[in-house]
Length: 102
Image (cartoon, rainbow, N blue to C red):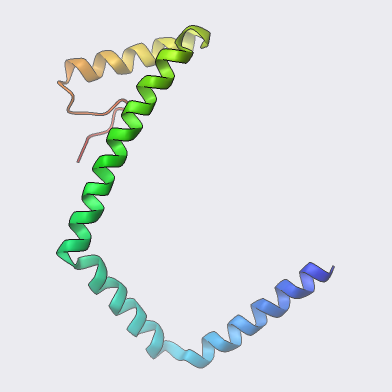
């Protein structure tokens, strides 16, 4: 019960403080966030981070599937084989999950 009262009090306090800040402050924060998101340096960093994430995920997927491959149910093992074959036939244009590397 104490946690509920604390949560409700925090919710009420946040609402009051939020309404005092007003719509103008919200619009200012939104505009700043959009400017940061459209910055070329930020966009390049985000794209390179996404690409690295896909590479690491692919490596981890292969490492895990090689170690666990014999212990998987047949239905899962056949799906993994299908995805691997698709990746090799596509020349690596898609990742192991069947999505494109854009």
